[in-house]
Length: 352
Ligand code: IPM
Ligand code: MG
Image (tube, protein in one colour):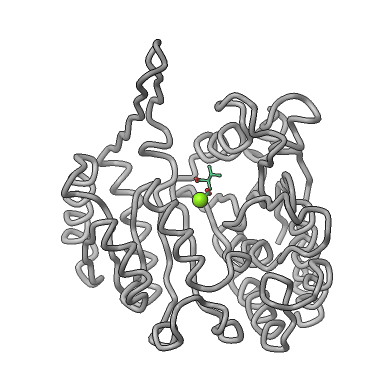
């Protein structure tokens, strides 16, 4: 098959980790006889330095025209003093999500067998099972509500709007995902305090009863959910939650697997188009040293093949090569090893 992928490496370690993922994609394309056009575009601080805008029109247009987007990371201390709306996180990442309609964020978190000692949780807890998927609503809630500062500067307001339609479509994504996994959805909200959460709970319950009664559903308040994640992670299969809770819980979920450098993500629209990126940031402190872990980006590329290009066997192939690489003790610095970023990419390709 032929596909066009917009590659947006971004800032910090972004270019290094994306370069390894691109090599892996090329190797898989060769092996299976696909033609992937991998066109590179500036995004984030790199784009700001070039033209004064973290999301140039040309980059947005290229992303729209592509079959999928592979992104590294954006942001860094150099850009922290830009006004809020111009910062890489807001201007590049949040605008891309909104403009491309990427409402469904999938963040799988699991412990890879060779890394089970890296988890900060007790072995007995890890051994009980830690393999979950956070389904985070990505284009609504407080991230995209109005943000206001009073004229006197002494008070501020952030609105957190949600509509039934927004809740319904993300709930369906979670239930569908659960059917392909262990068949359980835990919906996380703060319905004891927030009106949006009460609407969330009602809507999720209604969709469940109407169309997904075969899936097991439970509800948790977010404070309890955060606690259960470290106390009994085996409870969770699919976590369904709104934008900000999903941001926080996915970082927590990543840490309990022991290695934020391992976690990929997909941000999807209903037609299968998606943006794929590691869940970690641009790590400016280690940028340019060839020591970052490219596996989260390589695994994001695998998710891209599966979700946007319909290439499930190719995606499985990458994931299995990553598993064998780790089983052979090939570890980057974050995993306790000395292997370089570029060597890790090469090691995965050798095992493909
Ligand atoms: C994430 C990040 C972003 C978010 C930031 C960089 C705006 O933390 O993708 O989880 O909060 O969504
Ligand atoms: Mg986050």
